[in-house]
Length: 245
Image (tube, rainbow, N blue to C red; front, side, top):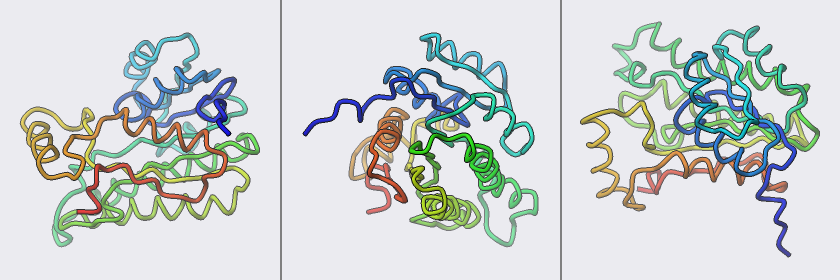
């Protein structure tokens, strides 16, 4: 039996940490289009958040500037939304700065990579008391969690930890649903110029899906995780077949 309500967010509040660009912004657009009563965008730059809110439009978007590794500021930003239905975590550190052989990685590079896990922990702790009983959390991981490669050891470890944190919280916070979302290569602003074109060509020739992932691909996956009441404790991989190669 079809249930149209499953694909909508009518009268619900969605908080997106990392919502000013890329995957987070695409999720914000789709959440607004799917009837969300309020979409709250959290990120470090007030100007980027304001631009994203204008992009989403609809009059149902609030912004709350905060750095996710600032526990107090992030907690205040999340709780400013009041009771929430969904927490979506998409913020990432600059991964290019965390790539390197283990012997050459600095303490600062390691700490910067771990900031993702630290920030996601702060966000989940802040949101847990204000989530509706059958709300949800989504933790965005990365394909390196499932398919590590040379020079990406610390990123692989952090992304795998994000997935494990989501699985553990699905048990601890039930009936709140907690899932991980794992993208492959996605066409976001972190890829620019010749690098972006190189990735696009590689994706179109080497990935089983034969295309460069788009933020909208991840947004629709996130909507599924927010609206399907029987999915929890899972890691949804949306990677064009990268891990299967």
